[in-house]
Length: 155
Image 1 (cartoon, rainbow, N blue to C red):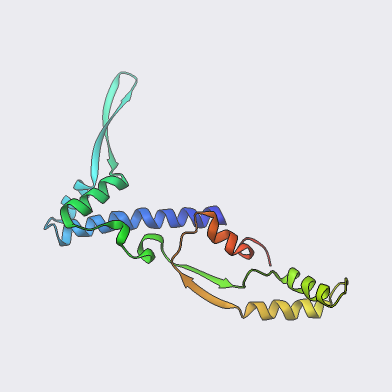
Image 2 (cartoon, helix red, strand yellow):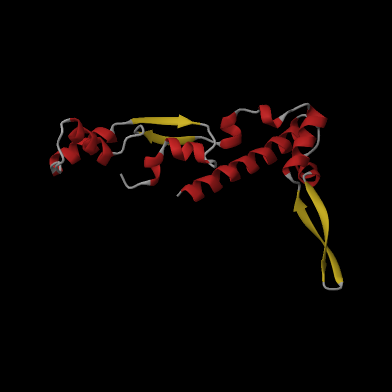
């Protein structure tokens, strides 16, 4: 799941950068949509054996950033995070898992025993009412996953 969500966030960034450059060209650069598409494409020669063909390849991020900054004074890094990274919606249980909550309670009481199914269900129900958060943050790097380890478990 982590790889999939990381890929989706990277895709969000790529699409937003393209759309930011595209619409800046159209709205502020006084070019049509077709011309804006052409500006954001580059022709690249590719050699296959003895034949050389030209393929259309999209611009890279640095070229889009340069277009935004040099033509429109837009520093893409200053754009709001919600547009660059998208929005992450998750249930915030805190750093304690269901099993460790029950284990910690037993240790505090000096007990080492299994808790009843009813107690586990009660804990599960309590956690199902945890706060739902909406944030724009980097989920590609480790920090998010280290702070929210339960997202990658079945608990």
